[in-house]
Amino acid sequence: MNARRLNFEVLTLFPGILEGPLNESILKRGREKGLLNVTLRNIRDYTEDKHKTADDSPYGGGAGMVLKPEPIFKAFEAMKTEHPGEKVLTILLSPQGRVLNQERAEQLSEEQRLIVLLCGHYEAIDERVVRALVDEELSIGNYVLTGGELAALVVIDAATRLLPGVLGDEESAYRDSFGDGLLDHPHYTRPAEFRGMKVPEALLSGNHAEIEKWRRRESLKATLLKRPELLETAELTGKDRKLLEELKRESEA
Ligand code: 4GY
Image (tube, rainbow, N blue to C red; front, side):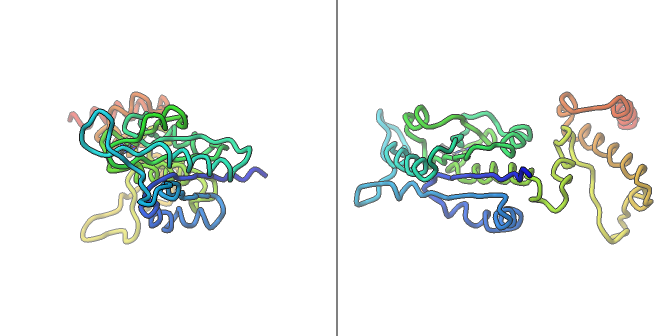
């Protein structure tokens, strides 16, 4: 038996941003089932002055505040002390990192080490933290957030849903968009006709082969129409390529 379990430790000034989402739906269930473990550590608890100062103005001047190194180092060291001998992977959520994709999410879902997610806030984090403590910078996209907390949630969520046993159906996480680099096919549920809009006949047929064929074709069609650049790196069979040529001809006609 090798039950997979993901261990995250989030270092943040605002643990409250993460609490709600971690206590709802699939993340909540994953935690209850013992498949996901998330500890929130408040950096402010490691300040030592009476005002609990965690940030300060930047050397050299300019707008915005910079997170001070000391409380972050203290929080990190406390985490290490509580996990003696444990290997850790420390990730800083930052727009300067490599952009998260499904492949990196899959790798993280298989990570054996304790994953420390370091969340900056305000304008920046003191560079000495990055140099001394951070193994990897990771971005969730090319835009700037008020802090790394929402990005940390995205990382936890994307990795957790790939853990066996977290979703109801073992396969469904991989069948979804990007498992093979294609977009998902359309989905329907009851009723078979809603306000004059019908569910495609193939899905009502009960013929498994026909259903799979329809879904593959619709995945290819959605990708061709909405995200054609994904076709360059998708895993395509010879049959897929033939179908794609057919779909292109159809769209030209
Ligand atoms: N984009 N992907 C992101 C972000 C906020 C100041 C450093 C992103 O991951 N994180 O925008 N983070 C900043 C706020 C300190 C992180």
